Length: 416
Image (cartoon, rainbow, N blue to C red):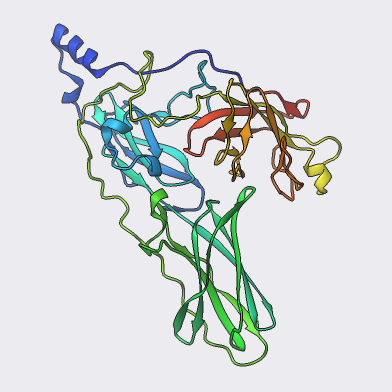
């Protein structure tokens, strides 16, 4: 069961360190070498990337990050107020998470593995300074399925990460040329999945190949530049209309490759305004986005093991659920909020959902008709792992509000 936090971790002002150095006649930390941060690898779809760089040998390295869409123009000064949350550790008493840290090895190399679900700004810091700010982009993965009804070709596209509003353009290959705008649209969030479906009537007889291109109308290198999500093509899929000759087999699709990180240091100083968090609280800066407080909405029960023998029936799947409780004295709109398990399965409140003070909402794993107090994820199989799993609740602004974790089967549920 996840324990509720009891203490706050914070940071020691670098000014105090400098003053101490002056009193005792030692060299200030800024005289040492600030850490470096290598370009973040570009991965396709949600998942882990390995962050690497260098620092003074055996130094403690702290990771700082914030979602790209909420950090436009940020440099070291702003980013230094946002340590990356270590979700694998117990939370502190006030609901905050300990920061992600690592130690540089004896040769000064450091590495951290971090999951990406959208673009981020990142940097690391030690007592000797901050690294350059790095931009971490994520390439969208698109899956296309096609079917034929007479002379109409039907298309179904799903994306990873599951994000609504991603633009879809269907293209058809005709003997050496890709015909554009055969069909167009944008992804819509349905439960945990972002999907789009459409069709094109009157398609030529014979076998043609189709592909989905996820691109921003203003920049074909990006699917959603505001979230730093890079464009991509689906695999080409064939569809045969009636009878007739084929229209050619396309070559491999190109890979959009924007320059997404130049590694330029932005808004110095290179000396930290704060030491990587250890003991003293730091007041949040004015630039911290406003929003619900950590712990304002909490997991109060997760039924991770459906009653009876697990079956692939909707009734059995709906035996799994999680319950969220509003712990405040005000109504909270959960629109855009997400719940994610350890494997990356995502449930999103896609429309306005007003959770009253002290009220509960239940989200069942399977299919059903939403009511004022019960929502349905729409899954066709069980999600939560009986032997151990974790649940993460975030706002639409990517702020972590609560988590729940279990490590053994137990009684089949946890009250977090």
